[in-house]
Image 1 (cartoon, one colour):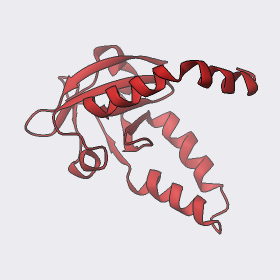
Image 2 (image 1 turned 90 degrees about the horizontal axis):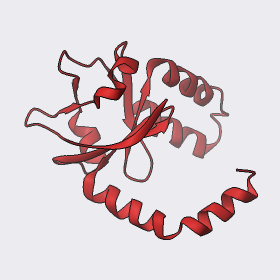
Image 3 (image 1 turned 30 degrees about the horizontal axis):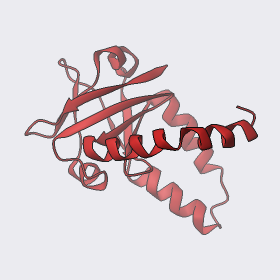
Image 4 (image 1 turned 90 degrees about the vertical axis):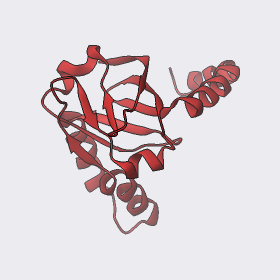
Length: 143
């Protein structure tokens, strides 16, 4: 299970260190792809297969299905972490998420999200200020 918030820096070669806490779960390889809200999503291979199968079974005749599948699948890259717990984050994904140097990696149960630090702070501040309203909506969903 992935939880928590961790600050890291991208080095000059585009490498990003995975938080030590998560390295063993990602040791067999992982997938990083375009996410939502200007973030990137990272999955273990096992979780990625589950998501990819769900996307493959959606009705491809619908434009939104095709668009979302393209966003997630065409933007994906599999990788293995090196002996120092790093991987190279491709330039096209850094550009998508406006990542330059400082990042925040957040754990969200079955995935990690990678955010530009400034974008994360803006998003987190807005979400925290709306917490009560969000909680009410979640209550309507049975959470």
